[in-house]
Length: 166
Image (cartoon, rainbow, N blue to C red; front, side, top):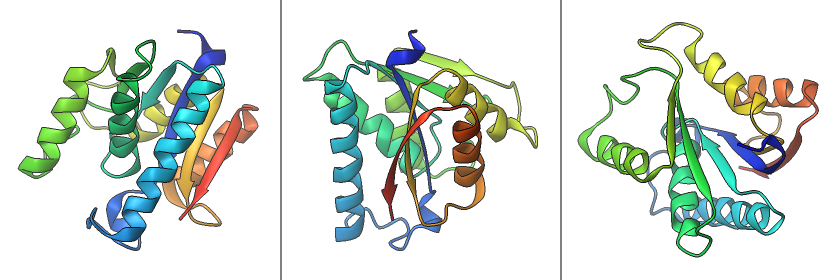
């Protein structure tokens, strides 16, 4: 993997977004379209590897967008950075189905921990930033939670950041 051609994602979970889990809401559709467009712009700029942390919301939407774009840009690779082995354990059936589909279609899966630890999400985010030169972030202003932590780490690590405001 060439770090200079690798991009990762950070962003909000559905429960933290104004439209929640309603993916048919106009705001969600617009957000997913902006995310898709930014990924395609990154591909056209030479990025060919994308790392998703596979959480519900932005991570999963980004993974799905990369897989869709892979149909037009076959050189594109998706790496699933999984914070711990049973990440999707408590998700509902439909969420698990989407998750498993992305993993199956991905080019590589990196499982960072065998089981949940209090730091597993921070470790996953650090792995993604350390192995990328570009971070696409979906966040409010100012960013909060894990997204803020990831962006602060990316800034300290001198990564290029593209922000999509919610």
